[in-house]
Image (cartoon, rainbow, N blue to C red; front, side):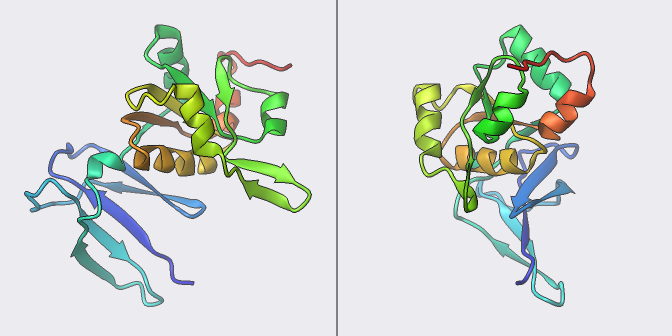
Length: 187
């Protein structure tokens, strides 16, 4: 299967802005690229195919602002929760993972569920998010998982659904637990 990665760029972003794009199980990092697009939509750089050649084409599917999410450290996530800058902290790990250890105040909304057949997508994920947020698309949301892979997928789905203020906690609970100063709940 050919590896395809897309980096979206926009004139509205500063040069220091980092973009994170979830691709399957990977997260790619990139810097803002030059963009001559004045339409408000993003140009998409796609690298793919077995030879790795790149081609540039315009993507008018959706504005960049609907896809961007902020990446924050566990320390920043905790600071925002303590200062009231976060309305909801979604933990998208499985119920089993959440029951062992969690960040205080996090709400479980699993992206995947464990079953006898292995990990299965949670078909009611967006419905559960809507219940937690009350359907308010302007809620300030922090999303975390175990290592950052599922949270990147969840963030993408939230942004596509129209949630405006979504932050992805880098490294998930693995990074969170490395900081001895951050509080944890162990039921």
